[in-house]
Image (tube, rainbow, N blue to C red):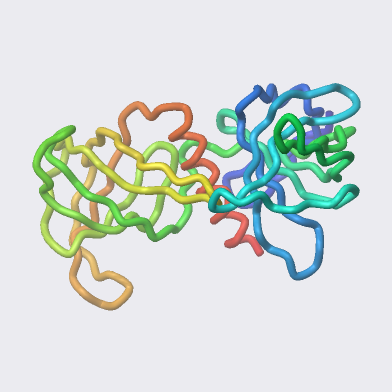
Length: 233
């Protein structure tokens, strides 16, 4: 295992083994084709790991349609576990169609393991509804303009809430073919007036999330990491 190095802001990188990532059946992986001009990222799920031979994953699908992949096709694979992201290069060893479509990916000798600090934020544009409590009345709406696993900054066109007020947020995260509504209690930690990107007056809320479910944390972390990668390009 190599010494940690610095990647995108707030991300610590090191070389590790796939064993250290502790991937489990059902965990999501992203496959990015290593072919010039192809930028799509396909989401699959782990079926099992056959060390040191292959990683078994579901075949990629988009809108319910099976995506064709050829044997020996190379991919950059990303996996998400806790606050860790791992990436490694692999290729399709075998594509099977029975008893259901799945792939054998080549088992990597090493992976690049990246840890994202909980407080690391990325600039995003995500619409959110703000409620007075879970299942309660909507008291406002806005755009999440930066996001972390721990909280967010929301710009609202109207005055919403007060410092230390408990609210409930509802927003949608979409990553490839995975789409999930995030429902979470939150505490307003700051309320200030500022101009939005169009120069219009807005209320900026700094909010701290309540306890997120594991899948919600993974989705937010995934989204934050993708935005960090774009910023570092």
